[in-house]
Length: 226
Image (cartoon, rainbow, N blue to C red):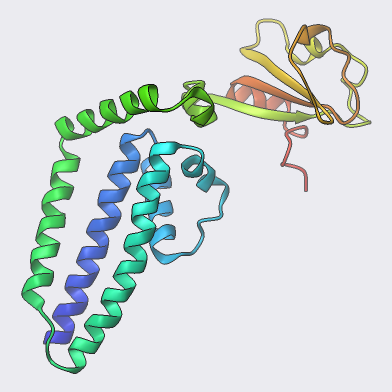
């Protein structure tokens, strides 16, 4: 039964670590589904190269949490190997593993409480405000983007209907969109953007309502080309 107990307890510990790390990421504003997948990716050293990983890499506090998760992943591998050796020598400390699992379970319950979640959220927000410059923030955090907001890069190609037109033509009347800048080669244009004549190769950064951007610029979004 020792082998079975070990496997069950080890799986419980891993599940608790995943949930604890997920809850910590959630307190920084990350969606729970994305957070859980990224935590599993970090622990298993697989899949942490997806586009969603940038949500963690670009956020100072999330980087700290991810570093701890990655280190735990390597540590748990060492523990696993050591435990297998102990199994072979009949010297496995099941009671110690149960104590670890119990401690993690208590920590998870605390993180799930509204008071602790609110405290951590406030603490992380204060730390971002006090310890990090704005350029260290992720774009989503800096612009306070909501679920229906989007920042996108629009490509102006040679056959674009906006070629030669002033950039203001990109923004329909009463549309909830804003021009942030235009990248032209190695130059970033910021002044009088509405009057800038669009050229082939220009990349226009816009910010606004997600549905509107994805509908009106579906074939122009940078990175979406096949």
